[in-house]
Every structure is written in C-alpha cells, then in structure tokens.
Amino acid sequence: MINIPKGTKDVLPKEAYRWQYIEKIARKTAADFNVKEIRTPVFEHTEVFARGVGDTTDIVNKEMYTFLDKGNRSVTLKPEGTSAVVRSFIENGLFNETLPSKLFYLTPCFRYERPQAGRLREFHQFGVEIFGGEGADTDAEVILLAKTFLERVGIRELSLNLNSIGCKICRAEYNDALRAYLKSREEELCPLCRERAEKNPLRVLDCKDENCKKVTAEAPRILDYLCEDCKAHFERVKSLLTACGVEYKIDPDIVRGLDYYTKTVFEFVSTAIGAQGTVCGGGRYDGLVESMGGPALCGVGFGLGLERLLLLMDNLGVKVPEEPHVKVYVAPMGERAYEQAFRLVYRLRAKGVAAETDHAGRSLKAQMKYADKIGAENVIVLGDSELESGEAEIKRMNDGEKRKVSLDRLEDEF
Ligand code: ATP
Ligand code: MG
Image 1: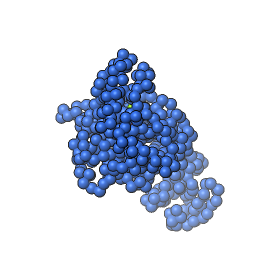
Image 2: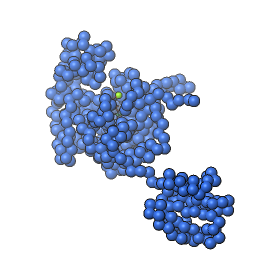
Image 3: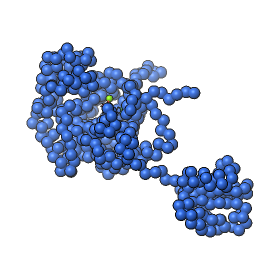
Image 4: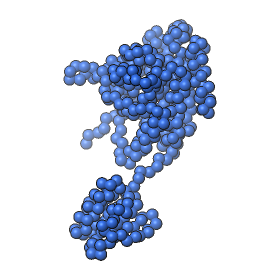
C-alpha cells in the first residue's frame, strides 16, 4: 500500500460536502462585496515569493517547496496567495482597469511545516486582495468581508485583533528603537532572532521561542511611534468598524508572518482550536505592488485557512446543512423491467433530477434498504405487474404516501 504524504489530507465523499458548503459561502460573500475571482498557477518562479513574501520570513527561509524543474528553473509551490496575485495583477495590466480592483481566490497552499492539528503541508486558503483603495474604508471593507463570511458559516466566537505597523517612514524610526532595545538583550534571543534583530527587527516580535517572547514583551511598541498619517488612518479604520457594530481588540504584538505589510494588520483568532488559533490574517501592503515591478499602487487583503475553519466548526459544533439526497430511487424487478428502470433513471438525471437504480441485481428487500441508506425521497418499484398494467406507484418515503401514475408520465412527476 502506498501512503499519502505527511501533512496532506484526502477529502473523502462524506467530508466533501462541507468543503463545497464553505466554498459556496466564500463565493457568495465575495460577490456581495463586488469582489471577483482570480486563479493563478499552483507553482510560480521562486522569485515571486522570495520577493513578495520577503526573504527574512519563516515562509521563505524554512517552509517553501522549492525545486528545479527539468529546464533547471527554480520553481516553488504557492505558499500563500498574495504574491502570486500581485504577480498576475502586474503582468496582466489589471491596474489599467477600473480601480479599486477587488479580487478573491480559493487556492491550495504548500508549506513544509511540522504537521499538527490545524497545521498541514498542503492546506487551502480563501483570500481577498483589493488594489488601489488608499482610504481606511478599504481596510475596514476587507475586515468586514472576512467577518461576514465567518458569520455566514456559523462562527461568531472569534476575536478580531487589530494593530498598525506604520509606514516606511515611521517604521524606520521604530525599527531603530527596536534594534537598539534588542541589541541590549541580545544574549537572550534565539540564534535566528539575533540575526533578524539586525536585518528585520520586526520579525523578532513574531518569534515563537519562549525566551524571545519574554524579551519582546517589554520591547518598545510600534503604536507609540506611528506618524500622523498612520495614526489618522488607524483611527479611521477603528471608527468605521465601530460604526458597523464590529468589536475589536488592539493587539500590539501582531506583526504578521510576511514582510510586505504596512499600516493596518489584523487577525481573527479563536481559543477553541488550541495553539493554531489564527483562522484569518491580513492587512495593508502599500509597497508590495511596486516592489514586484508594478506601479505604486496600494493593497489590502487577507488569507483565511479553510482547514482551520473546518476544525473550528467541528469544535464549536457548527452544523452544515446535509447534502441533498437522491430524489428518486427506481427499483427494477426482473430483466424486462430493468431496461425501463435504466431508461427512466437516465431521463430523470438528464433533466436534472438526482436518481439512482440497482446495479447488482439485488432483491426488492435489499433495494429498499439501499434506497433508505442513500436517503432517497421517493421510490418507484417497476416489475412485471407494473409493465402489464402500464402504471406504477410513487412512494414518498418521509410519510409513506403513495400515488399511481401511468408509466409514460413518471418522469414528468419530478
Ligand atoms: P501561523 O502563525 O499559524 O503559522 P501564518 O502567519 O503563517 O500562521 P498566514 O501566512 O497569515 O499564516 O496564512 C493565513 C492563514 O492560513 C492562517 O491564519 C491559517 O489559517 C492558514 N495557515 C497558514 N499556515 C497553515 C498551515 N501550515 N496549515 C494550515 N493552515 C495554515
Ligand atoms: Mg506560519
């Protein structure tokens, strides 16, 4: 037997309808916010992520599935959606179309991580990116879209945590202060953070090492360093959310795992799924499009992990409506009736009515059991006596009601 690779999962039929359900709600929510779908390849030139995600991040340093293809080009399986969307946005000149450009995706992502609950090597994201919306209303809109989606799938228990990490200008000043602070406690940091403290000190705030966490708990706070513009932007995001009745918490520790963020960053976090509690993370990334070779156009977005969402739904006992059942089960009795039954089932299916019949020459009793198991709403028995009389009974299974219908009218009854 050959096993599935570590950190990946099959979605079996009894689970697939839950995926379809959340994907449908994702699409509907995007449409309600006037956000259009974009699909990009599963792999890209490695450079897309090295530049887009940033080469001091965990993703680029440790987690990417990177390999040389047969033409000796370095390619990488998409570890996240944003950089790929930005590459496509620039390459296809979408910035020449009406702005803001509002895009969403449903995509597999690949990261070489240690698998555990809510952490896989192949996982899936629902993501949204809005380009060309400078105002704080765009940040609020993206947050509201994520919140609406989460509420529609039945989750209200998440905490929305907000922070601002400033812009190029105020962050430079903050980085100096943070660097000086980290330098003063250098011996307490993990080796990687000692390196990061110089190159990209903000990354240290994201480290999960216990000692590093102790150091960063007392570090200077970015919120105290925001420039007037960033401060006003953040205030406006908060007031728009409040105007919509959305509660939030300010969490000065959120810096996000990717290098491209500016100003607003946010997370939807749950305490119900253990350590991997962040279901959705996002923020503003004003420099990214330009740094990847496009025009100076701002962006805001989020990525939401669907496996974590499903785990959370399980743990909270959120019910998903059951899959629609087969509408009609046709039970043939004998060879002559079989052809009639086969044809009737085909005609029903062709007109869009879910139908099933016997495939194994089973007894009537066994067929009735099977019809019950698949939840058939109606059963029609077709045997010699029905063929002779030219009539058959449609039995409605929930209340046992029966009605006689002539054979040539059976398919019109559904
Ligand atoms: P974490 O801190 O948990 O590693 P992250 O900051 O790396 O998360 P993002 O890059 O912001 O995560 O990705 C957005 C969302 O994608 C996460 O909030 C999470 O729901 C999901 N996600 C990220 N990595 C994984 C993974 N390895 N397995 C399953 N879901 C994941
Ligand atoms: Mg991660």
